[in-house]
Length: 67
Image (cartoon, rainbow, N blue to C red; front, side, top):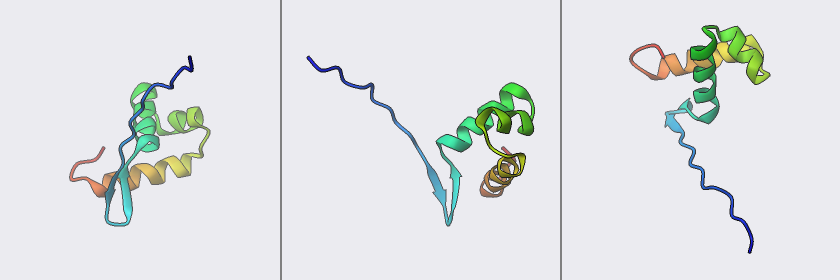
């Protein structure tokens, strides 16, 4: 009998032309919470600090309070 893969659900919230939050941004936020640093979270994910900063800035612009 074939094994089935577990069901996974990914959510993405689009606000206008921006992606307010999705799986990658959620992972970045979790990394920032765990490390206390945008730079450390970016390194863990294999992305540049600039890219991580831009993602955080986009999220901050999409919500009333900073994420």
